[in-house]
Image 1 (cartoon, rainbow, N blue to C red):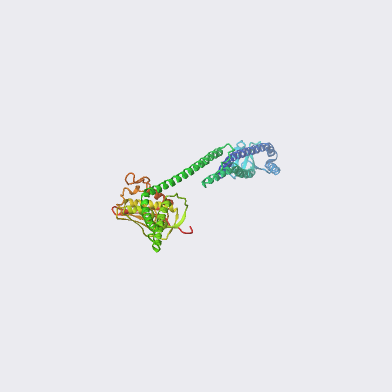
Image 2 (image 1 turned 90 degrees about the vertical axis):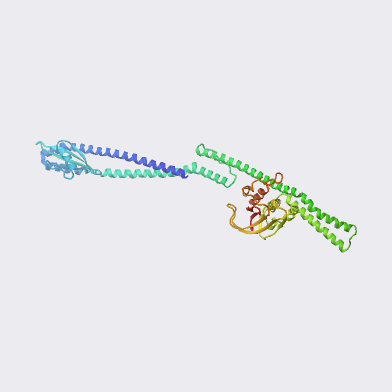
Length: 484
C-alpha cells in the first residue's frame, strides 16, 4: 500500500506539473491571440470612423468631431474614444506619445499601455486628414481588465482540475493498491511471520501473472524448502540426541565393565561372611542369642551386597528421567559404593567430604555419570597412598561468557594429588577422543561426555591444576528453588 501511494503521489505530482506547464503555455498563446484580435478590432473601428470624422471635421470643425466622438463612445463604452486636434498629443506616457507621433505621420499605430509590467489596455491611434493638410488623430482604447478576469478564472479552473485529478488518483491508488498490491503483500508478510514463529504455513495462491505472483511463487518455494530443512533438522537433531544418549549409555557400560572385576571382589568378602555365619547356625554350633547375632550379621552383609549391586544396576540403566528437583548431594551418593573397590585396589583413599543442603534440577543419572567420569580419572592419575576428595558446596562465582549470570552456584569438586596437567594439554582437555592415557586404557570420551552433560544442565566445568601437586575439577550447576 505504501509503495502504491508513493508511486501514485509521484505520478500525480508529475501529471499536475506537466498539466500546469502546458496549460500556462496554452493560455499565454490564447491571451496573445485575444490581444491580437482586440487590436485588429480597434484598427477596424478606427478606420471605419475615420471617414465620418474627417467629413465632420471639414464640414463642422473640431466641435462637430467632439460631438460625434462623444456619441460613438456613449453607444459603445467598451472602447474609449478620444479626439486629438492638430498640435495636441497624449501626455500620459512616452510610448503613447511616440505612437501618436507616428500616427500623425500617416500610419495607424497600436500599442500596449502601460509600457512596463502587465498591459492594462490596448491603444490605437488612427490619423484624420483635413483638406487644408493638417492632421489630427483619434485614440481608441480598450481595457484589458476582461482579459485579467478571464485569466484568473481560467487558472482557478486549472487548479481545481489538478486537485480533482490528484484526489481521484489518490482514491484510485488506495483502491487498486489495496486490491493489487497491499492485500497480496499483507498475505506474504503474514506468511513470513508465521514461518518466523515456527508455524506450519500454507502456500499462497498465485492466480495473477505479474511480478508479485513471481515473488509469491518464489516465497512459496522458499517456505517449502524451509519446511523440508526444518523437518530434516528435526530428524537429524533427534538422531543426534539418540546417538548422544547411546554414547553416554555406552560410556556407562564401559565404566561398569571396567569395574566388574572389582565388583566380584567387593561381593566376595560379604559372601564369605554370610557363608561362615549361616554354616555355624546350620550345624548347630551356636544357638540362642549367638544364633540370632550370627543371623543379624548375615542379614547386614546381604544388605551390603544388595546396595552394591543396586548401585551398579542403577548406574548401568538408560536415562529416562526428565528435569527433576533433588538435593545436590544425591549426585555423589553413589560414589563410595560404585568406586570404593577401585579406590582400595589402587590403594587410594576415596573421601566424600563436605556436603551442602542446596538443591538442583536435572537428570540425576546423567549428573552422576559426569561425576563418576571425573572420579575415575582422578583415581587413574592418583599415586598410591594419596587421597581423592569429592565435596559438594555452594560458591559465589561469575560464569564464563554466555553461561549465565553471576551469583551462587552448586560446586561439586573432585580433587586428586596426582602429577597435575601440562599447560599444553589444558586447551584440549574436553575434546572428544583426546586422552593422555596409554593405548587401550581410555577412549578419550569421559571428560567430553561429562562436559556435555553439565552444559545441558546450564553449568560448566572449571579446572585448577598445579604441576606436581594435583588437580581439581569444579563442576558448577545452578541452584534450583522448589517453586521453579
